[in-house]
Length: 324
Image (cartoon, rainbow, N blue to C red; front, side, top):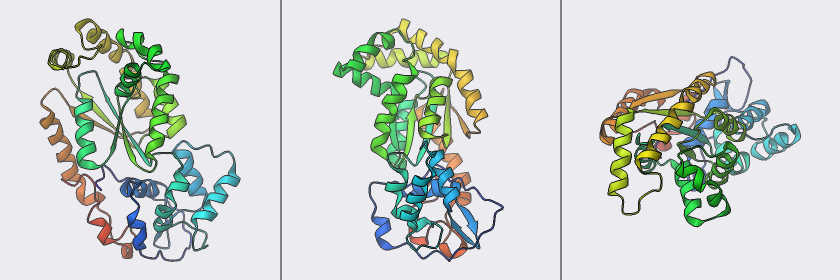
């Protein structure tokens, strides 16, 4: 499985813990989890103690808070820790974390990446390719809302006119919808396409899912976005209701109304932002990501367990960032 980013957080604390045993073969047979994403989450909160990377109870508490879980009840964290600490040494190593990830993460994605850009900037195209080539999950807020409208569900009937006017759906509605669909992708890395669209969205997202791992910012000129929307409307067999000139103008204006504040929120939350020039072809945008992947590949490569790593060599053959 490919990975977009590995963020490893080190601490100055020093504890003692027994060496981590090599990954048991059955751990690598887990198919409903993205092991790279789960390992990256582990790495963000784990601490190196006596040359071994592991979690203690405080680390697990911080990790669960970071993915949006309510950690007010410390007893529940202690119970989860006891379940995952298979060898009873007082720490959770990567092997134990992977084996117990479904319990530890519950219905939460392991990692969330948000994709920010105006209408027609190419978010859908880029996310579809990332999903196909990097094994991430793609959730589009716009597509989910349009599906509700097509199904004529109560939610769809409520948002139909709002979307036709090119306005933003209320944060409570869209956050609830996104959270509902993210629950089907526990333990995976999820791309949120077109969400959050406002600071209110962003705050609700953080409360439910934690701070995003990364943001891809698709920068595109207004004239290019407008041209793309009109071309898409004329070329589509089934035309989207919002693919018309007047609605496109309103959607672009709405995007600019909230965009600056959203970017400032990302900066305040220290979310890494990758800026991509999306005024060109989809292939030119992909090449920008490929260049970043090639540059960072040596730095994010996972080492063997004998060198205080997070995984062993045979797993590492399929890891190591955007392997291009």
